Amino acid sequence: MKNGEPSLTSLISAFGRAYHSQFDTPKIFNDYLAKDLISKNEFNNIKENMVQGIHFFNKEFQGNAEEILKWITQIQLSPTPLARAAYCEKVLLNEVKLGLKQYIILGAGLDTFCFRYPELNDSLKIFEIDYPSTQESKKKRLDQANLIIPNNLHFVPMDFTKEFSYRTLIDEGFESNKKTFFSLLGVSYYLTKEEIASLIDTLFAKVPSGSSIVFDYADEKLFEEKGIYNRVENMVNMAAASGESMKSCFSYDEMEKMLEKSGLLIYEHLTPAKINKLYFENRTDYLTAFETIHYLHVVKK
Image 1: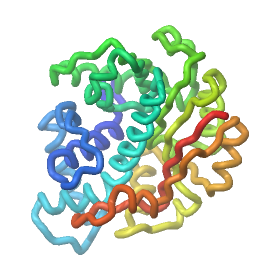
Image 2: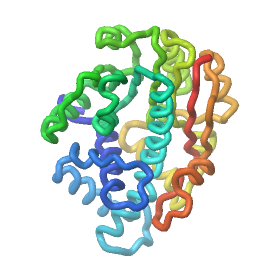
Image 3: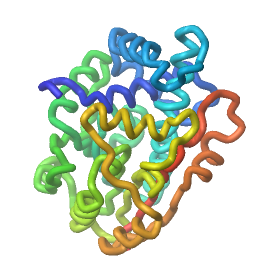
Image 4: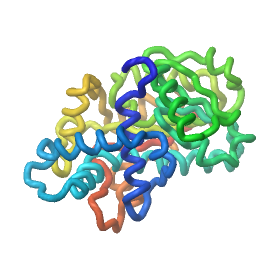
């Protein structure tokens, strides 16, 4: 990434949310502000690249550009980002009802939560952690969209995958004695098992009992499962081609044991089948839950 530019992952994820908000019905996760953080030129460039790449995803597909874009977006791009965001926000808003005061978004990208819930500005501190270049780009995009950064939103530049430090967070007003909620979405696959264990251990070392996290992970079939239209294999291959190879997958028992070592308990586990039932059942379009991908809500004892 160049200075002042977002990560490609954050841009593609925002594109998927923007597309869903504008064109899909019913909504799984309505991020109606995502489109305001992507320029028309960027949107059209991503669209054009996807349409031109249809033969990578499906050699037999026939249709016009809009139908091709819909197929690629709904089959390959959107299912996991939409459903995991919907699940994470459901858990988060329930925690807020129970008195939560602090929310840390790891790998925030172009997240819009605080702008969609202005009623929480006086009650919930939000700390967005991401690469400095991604955050600088986001600030410019917010300004261009005439979205004013509220006092409860704190940008914390950090490569947390290499080294997580509470020092900067505390400087921004984080209080380690208060219950905290973390989100870690779309990240675990790109870390080794040792890196994930170390990160989670560090995250929960300085927060009180009852603090929790929602994250997604790939099960032990990640590198052998094809998925419908080979989409799981495509995901793995695209990640490798982009220079961000997927490195880890877990059995449920492995995940449970790893979390136990950090003093954490699995409160809720969503398998692909459960995710499909919760978020994709009875749809008439291409959207279905992604194979091999699970969601967890984990709580500190």
